[in-house]
Image 1 (cartoon, rainbow, N blue to C red):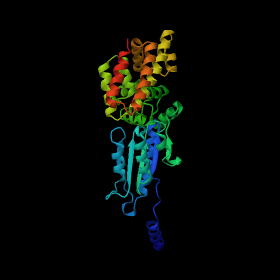
Image 2 (image 1 turned 180 degrees about the vertical axis):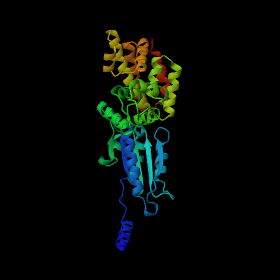
Image 3 (image 1 turned 60 degrees about the horizontal axis):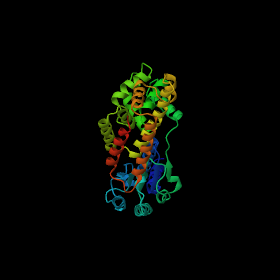
Image 4 (image 1 turned 90 degrees about the vertical axis):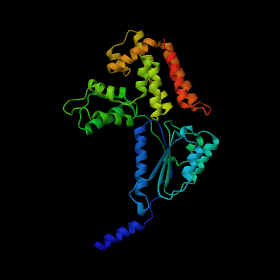
Length: 344
């Protein structure tokens, strides 16, 4: 039996390590699922390492396409490593790689990756430039879309049940209202919450609002709150905090567009004299703080101004994608100033 055991170990040791496909494209706004896919690849690379290094994680390098030139990114990936037999390169903001020369450089890099080297192109968009999208096998390209409301509700129920808490439906709706629309943000904020909550009492919307309003990270929802208050300085500060935290500008604009569309619905309710709890819940407004924000916004933006805010948001989304646009922080400052000027 002992001899067989030794032989099996030797055979396992001598067998060739299964190769891991080298290049991946992970797209879409659902950060939680996207990060799970990245972590899964890390584990595959760890398991597929050389026998002398088996079990250790890959050497990992992260680039931001808007900050580091594509030529430098390609050069770093193509350089051989003397100290690591497995490497993982992640390029965030890959939608910014649009020029023909840059696309050709990345495609050439993908086609000549060393054994043990993996490259992931990441974007919150749902597609990249055509030349990049077709550079990896179809099975290595995934789009992670935002979850449907029922899926997010089920996710939250499951999270709190596993942690040993009972949460009311209004508590779930409060979280969805106050936290960014992806499971990564939900997991981060809910993990903070459970450190303050009691397992002996059901979690209600009032409890959620009490803790989240003081402890959550900066988000586009909080930025909208400052815009609604007419505080240009705080709005600019909020935007800079988001950019410093590497929040994709297109995602910030997308979230603000969602807020302005909801503001249009609120203004319509106010015009028709239907601002009541039932109607507000129908448009996704549950907590007192959020209702206050939209009431404040409706006092300084009429329906025409809200429509203009949406149009300006779309305009800056296009400008951000332009290869001749100015620096992102300058562009986003201009955007906030433009939004605030539209207020009455």
